[in-house]
Length: 174
Length: 256
Image (cartoon, rainbow over all chains, first blue to last red; front, side, top):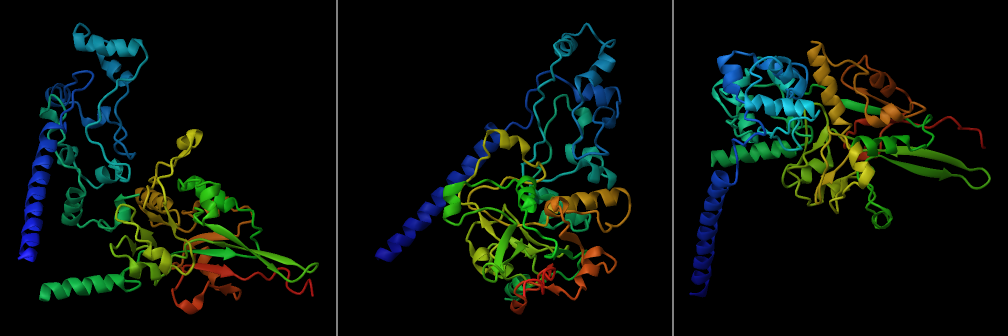
């Protein structure tokens, strides 16, 4: 009798614990995890990459030769915005950064943990399009994280494209 | 049942030494003991390259010293006829590594480069691999060692900073191997001899350490490995180490 009680207790604890975990996870994902953070300047990829057809590599210029794609410096923004739409309040915000000689504190959306070695160069050279991981950026007015960037997500693509040594831990971890 | 059997078979093959069917490289090192003068530049270089923590005097006193490569000192003979020999010992990257057989979570395994690698994220710190290692080269993070004020700015971004409860060891500077491969791929060629130099090899003033691919017969290590002075540590254990030592003969017959 006592054993049965103990078993019941354990099962009850497991069920309650599992439910709590699931609810907590869902709450965390929906309320405490921001996939579309607010940026210091309301920069719109829709206007730049969508309507005006500026190629990604014009601003993210290290993508073919570096690990990071590179957030453009203020000078690159000012290259156009010295003459384009200078009367807009958002551009005046940008000009303020330029005049104060300060970098714009962009919020990173696609953040990888410290123990991951990811190179943009290798993926671009393998013929991947930016949109495959970053989604249809050209239609986003504020950047949203589309892919989960989790290990399973990486591996599913490596497996699908049968990348050489793509499943070795030290290919991506450090 | 058959599913269980296939899983069991896979796990068993994993635990067998040298389970990789195809190998791209077999990275190896030759240590010329005639040239080693025990300056410990390799130790310092390793500390700097691999973000090793300085554990301090108290931890060293209870055998928690943290160097991935260490210099062992041998004194032979009696005073005044004394010879001192030095022998640098790092992870031997065994082909049939004893440590790999013990890990319950498969955090240490053999990869396609002939390296015995450690996955920090997977390690749960059972200490089994360190117990199994005959060369005593595995190091355990007893605490989360935080680098002190100016030292945190010299951390290598290519190497993660390990935390408490994780086993680690010499990786043959795998970050440099990866970087060399990356460069070779850009230039559309294979990795050639001399592309990869671990921190210890690079910093060795007398050039006692040589690194390269043992599978490539033209590489410098392969040539040196054929030397009649060659031996490997504890060869009777049949662990098939990748580090080859060249016996010290420089002062043979001098002090007799």
